[in-house]
Amino acid sequence: MRPLLVIVGGFLGSGKTTLIVKAAELLRERGKRSAAILNDQGADLVDTRLVSNHEIPAGQVTGGCFCCRFSDLIDAAERLKQHQPDVIFAEAVGSCTDVSATTLQPLKRDFTADFQLAPYTVLVDPARLDEVRSGRTNPDMAFLFQKQMEEADLVCMTKMDLHENEIALNGISTRYVSAVSGSGVCAWLDELGSGAIPAGDRILEIDYEHYARAEAELGWLNCRFRAELTDSLSPAMVIGPFLERLDKELTSRGVQIAHLKILDESPSGYVKAASTGNGQEPAVEGDLAASPSRTHTVLLNLRAAGEPLLLQRTVIEQMERISGQVEIESFQCFRPAAPKPQWRLDRYRADHSEDQFSNRSVEP
Image (cartoon, rainbow, N blue to C red; front, side, top):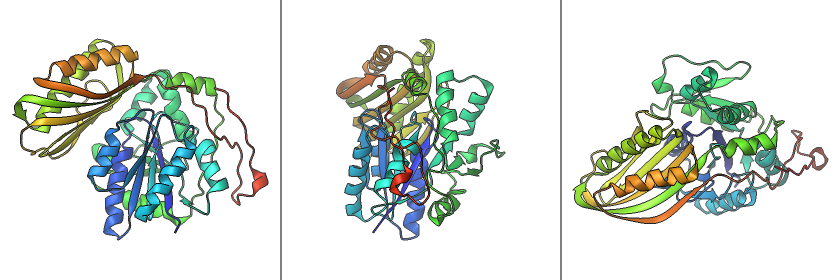
C-alpha cells in the first residue's frame, strides 16, 4: 500500500495543524485512516500533543526543517505505515520555504514506490496576508511568507469562518477553507487525491543568505513544565491569565509575536490556546468545562522577533508568578541555524526520469 503523502506548508499560525485534524476527522467518517508528521526546529511540540489527543497516529521531525531532516521525514513516514494509513499529513515548519526543491523533488525521484505524493498545499491566513500587504510585517518575515506562496501547487486561504469575503491572490488559483466549520475541507481532500494537479510543479529561485537571515530574525522557544498549584484550577483558568500576562510583557518589551501556543493538560482534560500577534484574542479549543485540578502539565511554543535571552527571561518570569510549585521539565530557546538541505533538486520533469534532475549543493 502506498499512502498519500500530503505536505502542508504555510506561515506560522496559518492553521496547518487545525486543518490536518479536521481533515483526519472527515476522512475517518469516510472509513479512511490518517496519520500526521509534525515538524519543528525544537522538541516538545504543542501540535504533536494536540494531534495525539485527537487519536491520530503522530510522529515528529525535530531539530530542523524537512529539507534539512529529509531522512528523518522518510523514517517517520515509514514508522507510521504500521498504522496502515490511507493518508499521511506532513506539516512543515512555519518559517520554512524551498520545500519543492528540497523535499518534493527527492520524494519524486526516490520514493514513488513507497508513497503517492499530493500537490504541495500552502495555507494563507487572510489576517497575515493583510498585514504583509500593508507593510506592517517585519520585512524578513514577509519574505518567507511570499516565497511560500510562490512555490505552492495549491494555495488555501484558511480561517474563512472569520472572514466574510474571499480574498483574491493575483495569478494564483486559490481555495477557501475553514477547519472550524469544515467548509471547503472535503473539496480540498478530493482535489489532493484526484491527480489533477502535479506535485512539486514549481521550484523557487531563492537567495539562501536572505533565507537564513530571515529565519534567524525569529527567536524560538519550546518548554514543558509541571505545576502543582496551591489551589485547584481548571486548565482554562491556568493558561488564560498566563497567556494574557505573557502577551502583555512581550509587547511592553518590543517583542513581535509571530505565533504563541500553549497547551495545558490536567487529569480532567486539556485546553489549547494560540495567537498569531500581540494583543490578539487567542483561539481556544479543548475541554473548557474541565473541572479544577491542582496538577497541570503545560507545553509552551513561542515564535517571536526578539532576542532568545529576552524571550527566556520573560517566560520564566511569568512561570514564577504561578501560585504553587513549578518544575521545568524541558526548556529550549534559540535562533534557528542556517538551512542546509540534504538534497536540492532544482529541475524536474513529470515522468521522473533519472536524467531529468540536477543536484545542487546549497551553501547558506
